[in-house]
Each structure stands twice: as C-alpha cells, then as structure tokens.
Image (cartoon, helix red, strand yellow):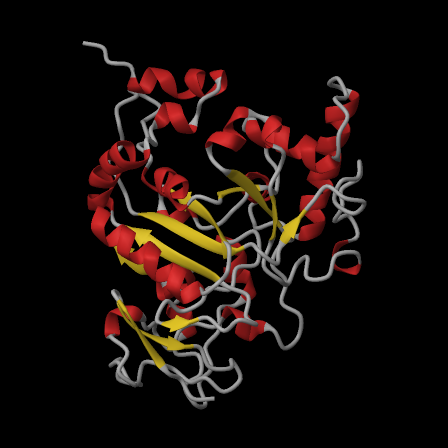
Length: 354
C-alpha cells in the first residue's frame, strides 16, 4: 500500500501503511526519507543490548516545550488519531512509565515485575479482606477496587481522563519533598493517549459481578493480556474526583506476547529489511503494566489498528503550562482534588505561610 501525505500545522502526516509491509521512515544513516521531517520520528540504536526500558516510550514521543507547542501537539494527535475517542494519562516524571499501583507494590515486594497470576493473587486477597474485615459496602469487584484506588490503595486500575488538559495537569503537577516540604525541581513529564471508543466497558453481567471479572484471564476475556486495556468510566456518584477529573480507569492484564505478536512492540525502524527490531517483553513489563502499542505521530493511524500515543513535556515548560491551565481552563489543585481527602493531602503544600 502506498502512503499519501496530509498537510497539517505540525507538518506532513503520512497515512499508515499495513504493518506487514511498512518499512522504516528513517534510512540506515538516520536521515529522514519520503519527505517526512526528521523531528517526527526518533531513531534508536539497532543494537538491542543498548536499549533501556524507557527507549520504548522515547522512541515514539514528540516533545512539548511550551504552552503553544502543547496545544499544537494535542491538535496533531487528534488529526493522527482520526475519529477515535481518546482517554489521557499524565505522569509528572517521564521515567515512571505506565504502571498501576498494585503492579509497583508487587514489583517492590518481589524484586521483579509481577505476573498476571501474582496480580490476581493480590487482588483476590484485597477484595476478600475489604468485605470480611471492613464493612461490606456491596457493589461489584470493580467498584470495590475503585474505592480502594481513590484512597491510595494498590489496584491494577490506572487513572485516565477524557479531558487531555486534566492529564496535562497531572503531568505538570508540582511535587514536594517529604523531609522539608519544599517544592521539588521540575522534571520531564509524560502524556499517554489511548483509544477508548471500542474498548469501553460497563458494569454488566461480565464486568459488574462481585467476583473479579478477569479471574479466568484470556479464556474469559479475549485480548485481556494482549490487546490495549479496556476503559471503564465509573458512575460520577462514586466520588467527587470522578466528575472533577472527567475520570475513567484503564483495566487490563499484564502484557503478554503470544507467538507471532512481538512485532507489536517494535521500535521505529523495525521494518528495515533484514533487521526487525522489537522491544523484548521482559523490558516492556518494566515500564508498562498493561499492553501499550504506541503509534507513530508522523503517520495517520489506520482505522483497523489499535492506537496509543505519547508526548514528553519538557521540565522547563511546566511552569508556564501550569499558569495557563489555571487561567484558561480553571484547573488548579483545588479543582482537581475537590474532596476533603484532597484538601488534607495537598492543602498544606499550597498554604501561604511566612
């Protein structure tokens, strides 16, 4: 399939060719080909032993350097994504990757990334104790996990928002030191965008049960460990933050790569003839607790392809972006964390004292 170029404010966009025939958009010497600007695609070393886990995100990213460039890049993603509905996640440190709180807890406890079975073991015990040792508040297993997530407990749920500017808030949110409570120096943050329109779930007979819906894994939920995560938008009545943050959750299994699917974690340049480069699954699991197949921001994503994208927000751009988020969108610490738990957790950091 040939590629045609569309013009946009951010440059030319190539319509994505089929994955089994598309070749690298960067030649073997690292230069741009086919008229695509070099800044659109970042090359990586062809030697797999030089990759670190963050290489996977950095290889596909574009970089935000100001409020103006943020808005340009968000508009560019909208064009690349086509008619897809997206959900967004922001992390204030780009080295954090895409890891759920339960996944991080088990990784620290066990000393290595957990398996799907290990995640299920923790969740089963957590839901059980939530109903036996604490008052059973009823509701589905998903709702129980959402309450635990809200108060900082470990679950596989990953917070996202339907509003990209909420994710930008989290990616640029100031952080404070534990010892003297002074603000930490800003570091690069990261935005993720996931397609949601064909991944949305409801609390129906499958997802709304008292038991964990994914307890039988791939045999019960096709694509649980191999496709992009599902997106659950809980009822706004669940807590105040859901409404304030236009919130939802990513729900998915630990990344698994059945035979023949490793190319899903390919790096830019993977289709150079005779040298297909992919990200080993053990390294994928160091930076992602759910499957995430990043797409090029230099090509418009095919309609039949699962899509996720990433941007890195430069540390030096964060102060300006925070000011504009407040002035233009009204997003500040009290708007994003409107409940009393938010006040108790964050209020003292922003109280003006001499």
